[in-house]
Every structure is written in C-alpha cells, then in structure tokens.
Length: 390
Image 1 (spheres, helix red, strand yellow):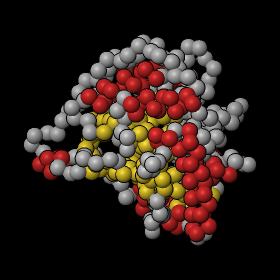
Image 2 (cartoon, one colour):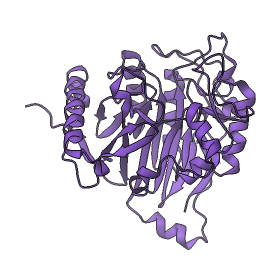
Image 3 (cartoon, helix red, strand yellow):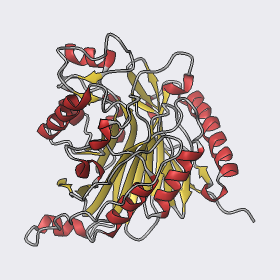
C-alpha cells in the first residue's frame, strides 16, 4: 500500500537564478514540516515497518505529447509501457520524469509554430496510472511550454488520478519541498530540480513554481529531507546536462557531487536523451542519465534509441543494490533485452557501450568507479562500485 504523505511546506528560496552549467547560490530554505508517521493502530503498517528493503524502478524521460499524444487521443485505453510490465512489476514503486505538461489544448499536442513546444492531452494522466507509474518529476525544461495555466492543470489532473509529483507546485514552497512516499515500511523523500529552461526569460516566472537546480538550495533541501525523523532514503531527480552527449558536463558533476555529499542516497538523471554512466559515492549511486523511456528518437543519433530502467533496492543496513535493465526503442515501442529477438547482439552492443562509459567515468572521477555484472534472464545486470586500485 502506498501512503501519499504529501508535500511538506517549507519557506522557499528567496530568488533562484541558476543555470545548466554553473548552479548559483541562493538563500537557504527553512526546514520542512514533518509528515505523519505510521498510525499506531494500523497493524499492516506496523508489519511493513519491519521490512529490511524496498525496491524502486526508475525510468528516464516520458512524454505523451506530439505524435504519441495524438495516438493516445485515438486509442485512449492503450498502455504505452505494456512491453515493460514485467520489469515495472518487479518493484514496489515506479518513478519517471514527466517531460511535458498535461493540458487541454483542444486536441493540440505540439505547437504549430515550434516543434519543441508540446503538451500531453488530459487523458495522459490516466495513462500514467494505467502504466503503473507511482510518482513523476515535473522539474524539467518543458514544464513551462504552455505557461502557468497548463502547469497548474497538470497538477489537478495528476491529483485526480492520485499520481504524486515532485519538483513543481502551486507555490514556490511546494516546488522545492520533498515529496514523501511510504512503501513497504520505508519512507522515501523525493526531490526534483531542473538546470534546463526553454524560455529565455529573466526573471523566469516558472521559477516560482518549478524547482531550479541551484547548488546551495539543493544541498539545503537534501540535508533537510535527510534530517526528517521518518525519512529512510532521499532520492534526487536531476534534469540537466548537454543533450545527446554521453558524458556528464562539469556543472552536472559538481552539482550532483554536492547533493551526494549532503546525504542523497541516489541521484536519478535525465534530459540528455542518451544514456550516461553510473557512478558511486561511498556506495550510493549516481545515475547520470537513463536516456529516453517514452520520447521521440532523433534521426542520426542512434543512442536515443536506447534507454535504461534502473532497479534500485534500498536496504536498511546495507548499501543500495543497483541493476540496470536496458531496452531499445522501435518506433513508439520499447523492446526490453529479455524479449529482444536479437538479444545476443543487442546485449553485446549495449555492454560495449556501457563499459566504455564506465571506463571513461573512472578516469574522470576515479572515486566513482563502477563495474557491470552479467545480464540475467530478465535482461537486467548489476552495477557495483569497482574495487579500488592497488
């Protein structure tokens, strides 16, 4: 059972003004109000409290805009993640980045004037629920594509189907506050920020409602969430970096390193639309980019056709276990490795790519070195911290 504990309501930062390459300082947010604990009379909740682990599946960029949105309007009951049902069902909780608003634009799912401006139709909220998604990040560069009205409509539609969101809110305080989700006796605190903004506005009005990726603010938010008595793990969603580059840029590495130093248990990255490496900081993973999940591929950039699901098992008294489950995208559909008719070739292709990323990462950030294990029957492979060099 999931208990949506809701947003705590801290006083938000005084004036975000960050950027994708150099997150800037800001005024610290005050401590969030504590969320409720397990009810004393709830025996099922008490039983769950004794569990020693909980598993989260994390995916990358998801959008029901553009052509996918038009298809959803024609086929309102479809499940665009049906090919991944088995993998999604292997976890207690599922998280993705929702790379668009959900709003009624009279059937329009992409601007006729700008192909990079898009929204999902209202029925996309039910599609997310149908696809088993439990929580979404809204802090990304498309959250303001249709302005404040569409963003607020997104809140209402997600609330209507009981899909919690993080990284955006009706107030600044809600946007920057953690979202607490309780599952299997664990309370997980989710934070989400974006370092990428589509509109060149100064000041950008979206920063009143969408969490900006500023170093000091993020560090404060992580520390405050970590200090909450009922919180077991802190999960940071980060939207930023260079699109179509498979290596995280220095600003990303600095920001995410600071989040880990502040106590984050995992960082889940997206926005580049290609996969990037995985690193570990004292046994805690940074997933720099999981690539596309439900996003259009880009012609001439073949690695936009590959995405990852990350299966993260959080333990009370041990380091987080990390598995990656790759899939390729063919048209609108995902083909998980376990079901790929060309599995052998695809597995070898993927291993070469990821091991190269891990080797390069170990040269750039030797303290984050990681190694890839063998793929199992379910198409997933463990990623573990690499043994230190002698």
